[in-house]
Length: 269
Length: 269
Image 1 (spheres, each protein chain N blue to C red):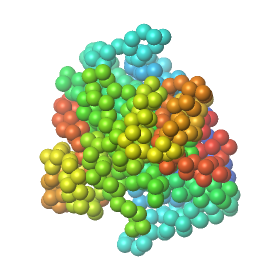
Image 2 (image 1 turned 45 degrees about the vertical axis):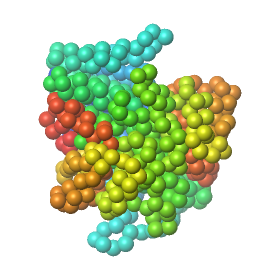
Image 3 (image 1 turned 90 degrees about the horizontal axis):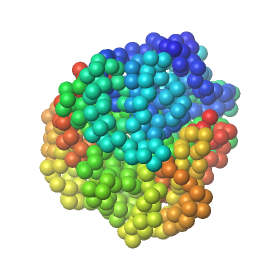
Image 4 (image 1 turned 135 degrees about the vertical axis):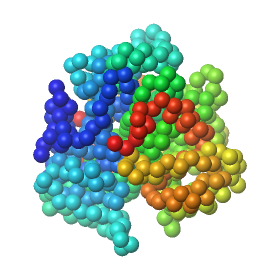
C-alpha cells in the first residue's frame, strides 16, 4: 500500500457545508501538517488563513477553495478578532465549508478559543484540530529536546507579547520555577523580558536559543545566553517570527547534534 | 486533486537504510498523525513503538514493516532506556530503515532526547519528527483552549511522575506563576500533587479537568476542582493514560461547547 493509498483508506472526517474547522497548520514544513488539516484543505470551499501559514501548506488547498487572508500585511492593520469571527459565521451561514487555518496550534496564543466561543454563541457547528505548535517544533528543528530527564520536569510555553489591556506575565514567578521557557512572539519585548527574568533570579549565564522561521527555507538558529541574547539578536539581524528558548535544555543541543542526519534533526527540506 | 494525490505529490523525506526517525505518533486519533510520521510508517523496515501508540496508527505501517514493542505490558518490566537505545543502534547498523514511534511528541516527557544523544554518540544518522503532544491534544478534545486572552499568558506542561533519582518538581513555584498546568502521567501522584499546589497558594476551587485516553474511543472527560479532583477520579474509576489540567482555562469549556459539531470539537471519530 502506498502512502497515498493508506491516506485514502483512512476514515477522515467530512467537512460539511455550513461547518467551520479551526485547524493548526503547524510551523511551516508541510510534512508537519496533520492528516485532518490536510483533509480540511482538500474539502474547504473557503480558507481563512493568517500570515504564519506557509505557502507550501496553502498550495495543498483543493481547486475549489477560495483563499482569504486575515492578518497583518504591508503595514496595514489586520482585521480585528471580532471581524474575523463575524466573517467565519457569515461564511458558514452561506452554507460553505469553512477552514480557518492558523500557524502552529490554533489554541496556543492563536485566539482559537475566542473564535470557538463566537462560533458556539452563533450556533455554528465547528471542530478544533490541533497543530504542531511552533515553539515545540522550533526546539526540535534546533535539536533541543523540550524535556530531558535530570534537567527539567516541566516546560513553560509563554507569550512575549501581551494585549494593551492585559497585565504583563509575572516573569519573576516564571523564572522562580527553574523550568525552561519557550517564548512566542518575544523579539519585540526581549530586552525587558530578559532583564525581568534576570532580576527575578534567573542566572544570566543560562543558555538561550533563538529559532527564527523554524522548518522553513529561511530557518536560523542562534545560540547565546540569557544576558547576551538581545545583543546577539541585534547583531545577527534576526526577524520575526521567532521562538526564544531559555534554559539548560539548550545546552543539550551539542550532544544531540553529534550524529544527526544531513541537515540536522527536523531540518527544512 | 484528491487527498491521496496531494500527499503523493508532496516532497516528503526518504527514510534511508541505516537511518533512524524518532517520531511522535500524536495522541491516538490517526487523523492527528503528521504526514512525515505517516511517511515513516510507510517506509520503515522495523518500527519500535511504545504502549501509547494507537493500534489505528500502527495499522498504517507498510507490509514490509516488522513491529517491535518496547514498553510495559502485562506487568512485565519494560526494556530499560539504555536497552532501547542499543536496539535502535543495532538495527540501524544492520542497514534497516528504523522508525522509533512514541505516543504524543517524542521530546515531551518521551525520552526522545536520550535516544537522540545515544544515536548521535554512535554516529547513527537520525531525524526527530515532532508529534501533537498529548496534553495539548487532550485540552482540545475536551474543548478547553490552552490559552485565552485575559486569562493566561503561558501554559505549563509538567510531568506528574519523576524518576526515583530525580528531585520532585517545585509544585509550589509552579503554583505561584498563576498559569494553567497541564499534567502528564499525573494520576498516580495526584493526591500529593494537588495537596502541594494548594499548600503552595493555588486556590482550592481552581477548575480542574481530567481527560483520559484523549482522541480514542474510550476518551473520558471529568470536570472538577483542584480540591475535589482526586476523589472525582477515584469515584469515576479513571485509568491512565490521562492528562490533568488545572486553571481557569478549564472554565472556558462551557462557552466553547455551546455549539460544537456532533461529538464535540476534536471528539473521537
